[in-house]
Image 1 (cartoon, helix red, strand yellow):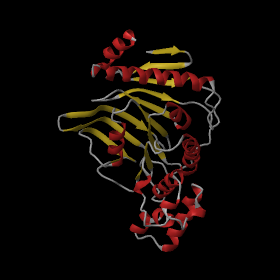
Image 2 (cartoon, one colour):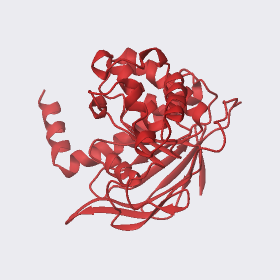
Image 3 (cartoon, helix red, strand yellow):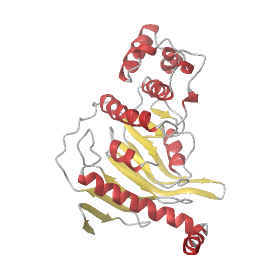
Image 4 (cartoon, helix red, strand yellow):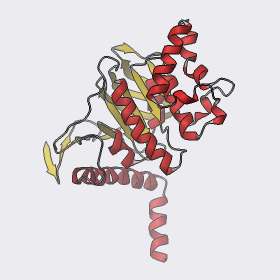
Length: 304
């Protein structure tokens, strides 16, 4: 069943009350991602449990090669857990998870992970040595290592920092080194776990713009975890909203059919922002009710 709601088509999908939504079409002139590098990700009926605790369940996502997907949802809903499974750090308890058609059974150079903290960089290595670490471990020649470092440091705008150490760089620059180090392995999929969450607002805005540019240039498939609705609208081809945990699932899926670079004041962007806020607000309130907090807050508000 399809229902038009203020410029957004809302389609109810069978199972777990999931909802798929697509923004109304607008004149779109995006830069197409570079061809050939991205790998498709497919998650079918995936569940992840830790003992008796069920973190996520019934996850179905079909992510085409080269797509930029943002995972959005309330705190503790299992976004990072799902991302860790995509990276091969943990195994799904049920269902299947494939990258490029092959089952994900563990960490793989095809699956690159960018963490929130830049402390994963090797402080005792220069920027150049950090970026070439993966190729060096694979036995790539020094000439090829230098080419890789030049290419990806150039892509993130840090060629001039090749001989510096991470401790000599700002937080934003260190995150760009981390992105370059991941891309140096030429992964088909780049997984990003709130990579700008610890940065100040100005640096975050710059890196959001840089991430969009790097994605378009690299052609990688990107799955990006965030709590920030505006960040998701700015970056994503599609936004998947998760329900509150435990046993979280996909609540809704939105296509961000807007031209790049994105204009946050675009009426379609504002409508999508409103729908995403509504979806997440419903889940936050559900989580509060489950914890017995919603009624308490209502009583406190009335008492005030």
